[in-house]
Length: 252
Image 1 (cartoon, rainbow, N blue to C red):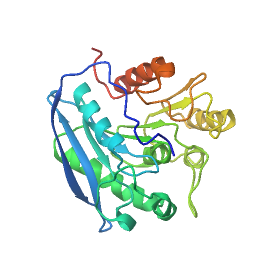
Image 2 (cartoon, rainbow, N blue to C red):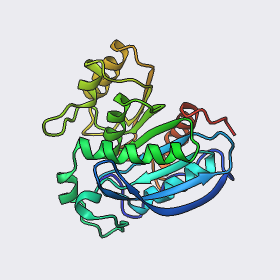
Image 3 (cartoon, rainbow, N blue to C red):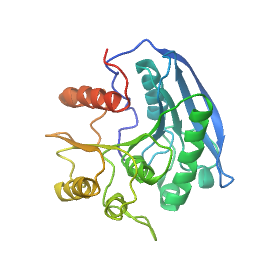
């Protein structure tokens, strides 16, 4: 699990721009119906962020995160990736995610991300980014090979992991498939995403000529982006700053 059940995102460096938030359902290109949380901002010309959750699906953490992005001046749409097996329902701390994670695949995640991107574009967002965490961070990296996306941000996304019959983010970069800038954020004390994997992805993006940035926070664990992790508050603050700058949001 990426976060403790009570984890919540840290506050962004700028706030006061949230307009509204609501729970909605998204119809995806392959006929799925996905639960989603849409949070809008009052900022003119704001970018959009498609938020792809970790293994727990659309946990309350990600609904809270969508609202924090709206506070910071970004239209945000957090989408559940388990609608095909768990239904279009919203998640709580008791949700048994394991069988649904096992059934998830790249094609379904791409369809869900596409529906979310199109929803934000239809609402007037000219620039839409994919942003994800862990399982969703890898999914965000995998969106960097699609047309129409402004950039991909992965918090501790798995760059070397390939789903059955598919490619990894590293494979896609080495194959010249990546089309858009990438921001990759990792904890230096992450025991599973190794320096070898981080460097391989960074090097593949460099070799492909893709605008990218890889940031590693020394001593930070896998799931450091949590307001309760006071020992890593500086990493959280710096991550917010980098993500918002990547999306073109002016500093506070």
